[in-house]
Length: 163
Picture 1: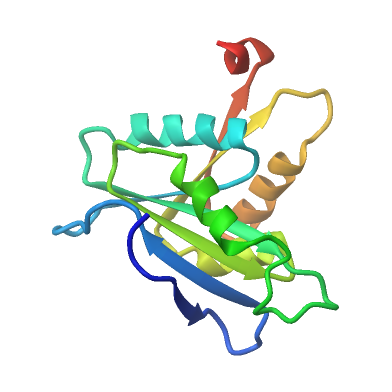
Picture 2 (picture 1 turned 120 degrees about the horizontal axis):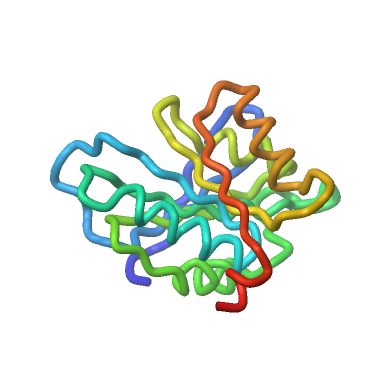
């Protein structure tokens, strides 16, 4: 991952901090489809990324891969409990066919941190495992929809994960 680590305040309440690094070339045209894939687990993130690649194929689409790292209250928001270099390497493992940017967001709350990075026209792509009960990802999708965001939820079966 080339480039330096850039830091930007997302809001004045110091609830979260955003670090961005460019993974793919800059898009020279205006994207009509803005896809966002939040990092959940490596397997589910890969499944969501594959779905986003299929959705954006042939369209004027861009993709943002977002890693929200929760910082507990005793720590300053500038301090990540996980090394930033590790988080950057974790995101670099995911390769997309679409023009992609990667962002690391340090926040006190995962859901609020993610929502702070979304724009009105973002389409959030999440993958979840099929369970009898609602998973954390399904609750996140419901929360995002309730806040007015567009969400696509992809169910993963055990067979699909192992394939």
